[in-house]
Image (cartoon, rainbow, N blue to C red; front, side):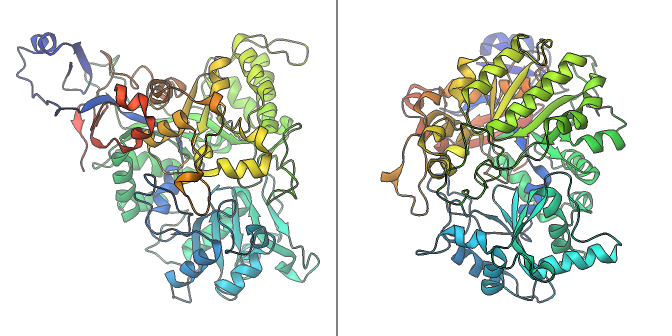
Amino acid sequence: EAVAVDARGVIVSRGTRQAVLATTADSQPEIVTLAADQTMLPGFIEPHMHLPATIQSNTGIMFSLAACRPAPYSAGQGDCSATIAVALKKLLAHDTNPLRWHVGLNLDPSRQPYDATTASTQFRDHAAQYLARDVSATRPVVIMDQSGHVAYANIAAFDAVAAAYRLAGKAWPPTFVKGGSFAPSADTPTGSGNTKYSGVVYEQEAITPFLELGFLSYGASALTLADIDGYVKRKGNGVIATMRQLRAAGITTVVGIADTEGYVRASSDFASLPEATVRVSSLTFPAVATSVFQSRPVLAACDPRTSSTCALPRDLGVTGIKLTSDGSTQGCTAGLASPILYTSVGECSATPAGYLDYTGDEIYGALSALWKTGLWRFETHANGNGAMKLVLDAYARMQAENPNPHRAVLIHATVGDESVWQSMAALRAGTYVYNGGTPAALDVRVTHLIGHVPYWGTIFNRQLGAAAAENIDPTGWDKQYGVPFTLHSDSTVTQPGPLWLARQAVTRETWTYPDLRDDQVQILGEKHRVSVEEALRAVTSRAAEEKELEGWLGSIEVGKVADFVVLSRDPLSAAVVADPTQLSAIQVVDTYLGGEKTPQ
């Protein structure tokens, strides 16, 4: 019925109202009483999002070309585009300054046909030509795919990046070592200069130079990749918009990806702003951990469990290592292995096995020195079943050499293959066989981008076949094989909103593009539906455990900090459990950090 919070923001008692008031009789406490039907939960935890990229997307510089979402998910999406042709017209009209690049994001050829009569495969095969015709042949154009692993650029953009490389004394075309590549043109594969490229750019290593130049064209007021920390400190409009977005979703802690030193500073500074509404824990890439942090994690400044004066800081430090082993499923770049391959029908037919960014030996080489320290958590992006197998083998190899006490995570774990879950169970139990031995047990877990199910469920039926699509983000296997799971948005890939994520995991409803009619909604993978309580744990207590924050966060218990979300109704009420589609209609009333209400 009640909790009491001390001056540090730590929970000191809980129980009946009478009992809790009795513990505070001498302190004249401020009393906050919830309204009828309101319910307080632990603050929601976003287990995996791209915080700097979310800030970038909220600046208005990167113009959203996203596919439309149905109600209730349409709230807050602003304008949207059912087709690529409509999206490109909007991009052309968005900014008429001839000195600037056209910069867009969240185009999704897997869900958006080019137009009513032309398939999106035509756009993907000839992206540079379509961008030159529909947007500009002379102004550079770069558009991020919603997957975050693909971009589309016109030849003017290629020429601009090539000129920048040559000016810096770098070779063009570049040699990529982290999975980056330029797709060759089907029409002019031996064309002069950059006309030999189709306009499709794969993976961040290759995409980043295009975005950097695109941002720079907007001048000193723009958010650039190099100055994102300065933008955060100046509290630009994207910073405030992101804070409001997270608060509206009931999120009090985010685990963000800080893959450069600038992103690390920006994430820390975002949490430290006086207006901040969330705590931030960061993952970084191996190179940053080694060069910037000398292979030692950055911990929270103090711990209220051991200090009588500590109010838990909002900046929770950099304690995890992230690696990306493959691309995205909807972007046709997930690393797949037989018997699950992309079908011969549709936009992925040219790459049946997708792409792997690293070999198993390269994953081991990138992580093993940091693993050996025993100081870090490890999280590896792996969408495809082939990528997951490589990562588990690399984890097992490192664990055999140097047992690591920390939790290890597969991010996304999308394309379900039951043998992979059997392997995870064996690794957790210490019975995983690698190179003739059995490494010490490793607490391996998964975090799912559950938006795969509604956003791309029907698309995966086409790309992977109906049998494989049933097992996308297989939370049923998580439960069957005892693998703890969490749910994340991967923002900006999908919108942050834990109650939305819970609904998606409980119902496993799909949306059919581009018309989004209610009578087309289907259930994808009935056996993988979870209960409302399991879904809520996946964005509270399980998420805290996965990030090794359970000593502070994730549940309303004595000794933990008072991070709460107040909801308009009880998500575990009989009515909501009976009809979990009501989950996404529940409103976030307030959030609290350390017992203090966060600003609107």
